[in-house]
Image 1: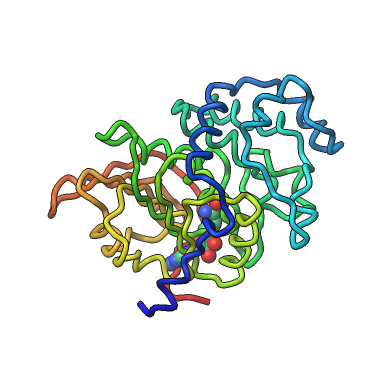
Image 2: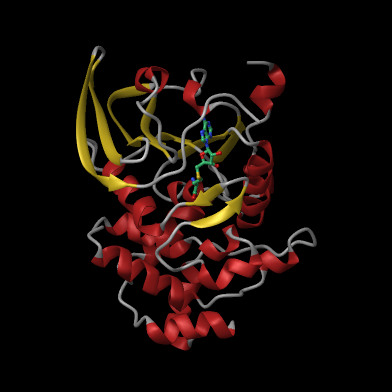
Length: 289
Ligand code: SAH
């Protein structure tokens, strides 16, 4: 890795305030997951302002800092209540980790999709982000992070790696549950898109890399957790090697039929594999474009 590469991880910290902000935001957001859905969906379509009952939670949201570069995306297009409804649905689907639910509640998902799709940002579906890629479905984002957090360390995650930054949404959610988040994207324009999406959120603990995630980041490893946001026929050996002992890797595996797999590193030479559930992801591909 060249010096340039080393500097490349985006120091979002260069535009950021204190690191403690994220965890505070998360704690305040914790536990507020039950919100009526119909009214909030309407609110999204009308682009109405957040209703009063959500004001506390609104303050717990990661706030955008409108910049001339992103005037449309930074605008509050969608009511926060819609996001709470999304989190309520994710909880109903079986995700129970309150820290994960609070993180999902805090991240403004509509800022990671095109303005034209903003009103759909909180439905439980993947949405196009360009270059034949998608922003992952909210449920699966939450589920993967929940599984990764169920470690022998009470959910504490110092350093995590995401393969497949895409638009940067999952990286933003991860930034609220891990001390350091590294995320790799192989498609240059998407790497740039993620940078643009994350910049107004001023998240201090995300480092974005442009490269082939199948190789991982050996210079930064080991990782307590690794999440793959794209499905390969198998999990690359390099990633298994970069997992710390006790660390957990969560990945979709397969081609047309895919399953979510959890791989725990038990010892230097031993990994335990558990198949969790069916899933559907874009393919993991080698190299960069
Ligand atoms: N994490 C995103 C999901 C993006 S979709 C979210 O928050 O919704 C999966 C992404 O994985 C795509 O952008 C795709 O380009 C990327 N990808 C596929 N193979 C990759 C590889 N080998 N290295 C890095 N990124 C890869």
